[in-house]
Length: 386
Image 1 (cartoon, helix red, strand yellow):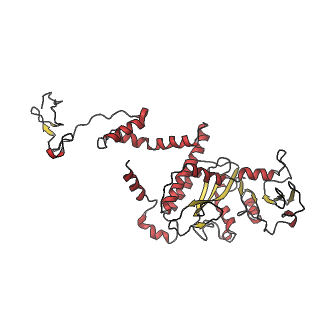
Image 2 (cartoon, one colour):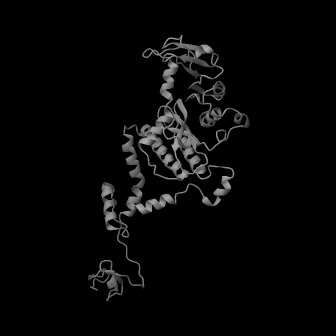
């Protein structure tokens, strides 16, 4: 298609019915994308079963246009954007569940009234973990989400938890906090019936505190000398960060000042990641993600290419380009169709338009209408020359 038509389609792109949007905005700040976003997440969940290890983290979609729920995150290069909370498979980086943060109270949407009174990070984890409750899977998250009450609630819901803890948590004993007397590489363990706490010293005057409900012994990795809890956390903590990285490497995003369109671009990028995971598990073939996305894009547009390659109303150069792109997939030409009879005469497409030469004539023998291009023609019915 032409660049003008492509830009026109982008300008007209909408993810909902604009006629009743104002009514839905009274109860849903995400009315412009919520229906489309929820259907996308439902499709992601219906076609994949996550592994035993999952990861929860936030994803910042860079955006500086007009939007009521833009957040500022100084530790991220983009700084400003739309925050999306995501649950992924820690091994394959498949996006299994997500929601868009749109202000105060958005983390507890869909939760019971008792759970809405909990801390905001706890509400976020509980909302994302709903599809995998009572499956004995593990959730890994950073210290913004981690807390003792969260780990206890997840245990009741049939889930284990692994994550770092902030040093200001009152449940952490003073001995587990950083101090100058502890040697580098040492570890301290604390156990309850269901919870395990470990404090590891990676550097002098530093200490990393982890909470786990799936580790119940003071085991140490033989190769690195670090606690197994540290090793497991490092292997499962980067699921969402890896998705963000993949979206940045191969992205379909374009410059826009409309936040629904920016979210649409990110969903298309996530769809490319999820389909690549599904392709690898179903086909078992090893293929570079860049090559896979090229093949995927070709398969999506192939029906449209086959439909347009023999369209006489398109410019000849465009049809030749379509033939070159199709290559071996070029379909057989359709059978020739007889022109519709019409009383109105048509002009020749070859002659200059100012001459206004007519191209529709009737056979002198049988009277059948024949379209000419300034040349004699043999009537197919009576085989007589016009």
